[in-house]
Amino acid sequence: MHPVVRAKIAWFSDEGHALRGVVHVGANDGAEIAWYLHRNHRPILAFEPHPEPFAALQREYGDAHGVICVNAALGAEDGELVLQVPEDGETEHASKYVPIPTDGDGHEWTRVPHGSSIAAPLRRFDSWAAETCIDLSPFDVLVIDVQGMELEVLRGMGRCLDGFRHLCIECSERPMYDGEPPAREVIDWLAAQGFDRQTPIEPHDDVLFLRTRDPAAAGADAPALNEWARQNGWKGKGPIPRAVREAYAEAFPS
Image 1 (cartoon, rainbow, N blue to C red):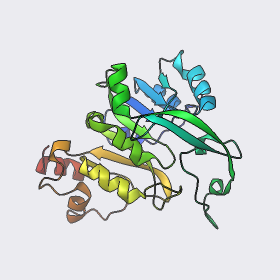
Image 2 (image 1 turned 180 degrees about the horizontal axis):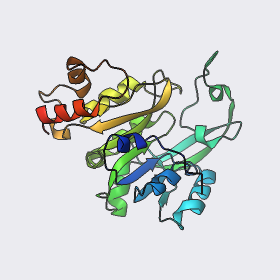
Image 3 (image 1 turned 180 degrees about the vertical axis):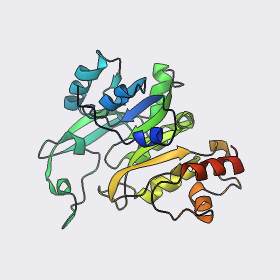
């Protein structure tokens, strides 16, 4: 098993949220799963398309710890995905898209040449869930780390997204992959689904979201949490204080 290293979703626990089961899309060999197990965030459903890290994921967690491991990519449609694997073999950087090389202090991995391509099954989450008849009620945390395909995965969730309250989505302020949407596009799309950003946008890092409105109420008269928080003293830096979020929920109940 991997060493237990604090996962980004621990922020929610720090803020007083009780987390249940986790769906992790782009799990690679399962490094974050050790933390989920340590904090008893169960059940765990992990998707990984590349066969090599998937084999390690299944070996380490699938049988011994009851993690549901699925060897498939998720996206906005069902079909096949061609993964572009970098020359250095770092499968965690494999993507549908090729990186945009950065200069200076940018990420070195964006300058690694393309090495090989492999085909992997591609599924919409909602169609996969319907086909497998999985019970999604225990899951309320969604983690997506898919190297530029985050918005495609979210769209492929369909109405299954309604069951999640806590999201951890890797985003890039400016696209790091040729075809990746910028973080602002992901944030705006999620706002329309009832989720508000809780942590800052970074050049390339995870951003946390909390469902603050029922999806059916998205687009109603209630202002977005970030806008309302700024009007009530938040300076726009760091996470929105818990007291402010609770006041918003009281003022604009779902």
